[in-house]
Image 1 (cartoon, helix red, strand yellow):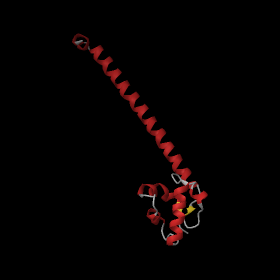
Image 2 (cartoon, helix red, strand yellow):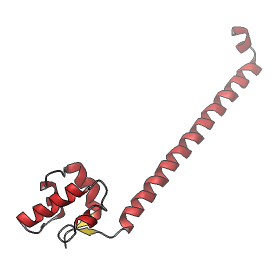
Image 3 (cartoon, helix red, strand yellow):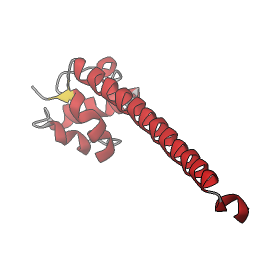
Image 4 (cartoon, rainbow, N blue to C red):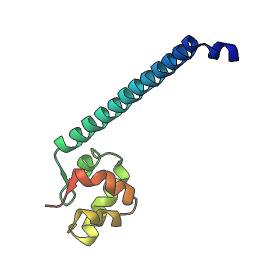
Length: 114
């Protein structure tokens, strides 16, 4: 093996193959990143194109259109609203049993209090 690398031709060939591998990997890595970025941008655009759900007037069916909100959680939101009055801010939704900070982060761009 040492004798192979003693010739300058072999060293040039080795370096060329190494560079080709590095370039090919970077092109692949960039295209994968680009795919994820495009998917994220598309999903984000779809979220903001939907009409905001007013948590002070929405019914169970409308709440169930929100990601991660099932019928039981929708009913809990309505029950909380009936017991405590209208939400003054959309952040108050975390006071509803079954809705945590992560849920709020996901729902925040989709809900409003008008």
